[in-house]
Length: 433
Image (tube, rainbow, N blue to C red; front, side, top):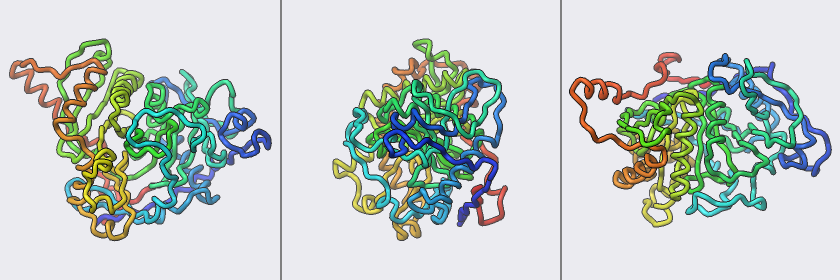
């Protein structure tokens, strides 16, 4: 059985402190009263797809500052001490033992049966986060030649900054939050600008082991303030290894001319769609955001995984919370206290009890995730909603044999975007750097 060992990477060149003037409300938070008089580190990226991307700069910066916050004691526990293993089996599900996380994690403060809910300033939101948890601002510099980092920069009160902050209840090394336009107090719902920002961050990190995730309300988001999660895990996620089948499409509207390919996950416990390519990153963001907005408007909870440096996006409509409310989830699964959000659905399962960790098997992981998935009939119905929203329909016309063979060759993708991971490390051990 493969055990995953995390090895902290110290990068002292980028260990900078967050600074702020001692004015504002006195709480040194991310509210407007404090931000407008604050200085925070600033990372400015180029939105030009052809601009040179460093393969290590953003990752080194993120991880060095994350480690510094860990050294300063801002996390509720030491996630690097949590046991993690790869469960034997074809899927290669990943199990982590994180005893007590559910007791230390901030409780949910809103209804779980409504995907769209208004922002409530009285409840916890990210304007109440202390600035010591902030790593840096993450701003679009337009078509600048090269991304750059400033150790300290004023916050423009006229522009709501995008903030990168630590997740104080991490589930993996480097676990952080991307909070778009923090001062705009946008509730937890996808829009095009938000998904585009997340894709830019994935591209800037330029690391196949850096993923971003999103949970809607009703799909185990715990804070109703727009945010994405991200972390590093130096192993291919099971969903990234899953076979996908391209869906033949024909366009109804200009959206279909954006070059985005839509595929379906095959032989995986959770039914989902996969979006890839696109003429530009903006085209990919436009199509994915339309799909997410469709689910939101139809009150369908969902999770999103951004993978492969922002080039592949997985969309999972789900129904686990609904089944829980209806009493349709077995007591055995409920006893595990696992809330299957984006990371669990992607195959990285956080377990709260040692018994479940030690007895974890591919069958038990599959059983849990299968409860998350929509039925085949419901999935097909939801897929039609999405296709209508993005302006395509599944093609029903016949093609000649030569075209059919070519289409089949293009359609059957194996989903592998990485070199084999295990061969890079000593036998029996995977190292997360």
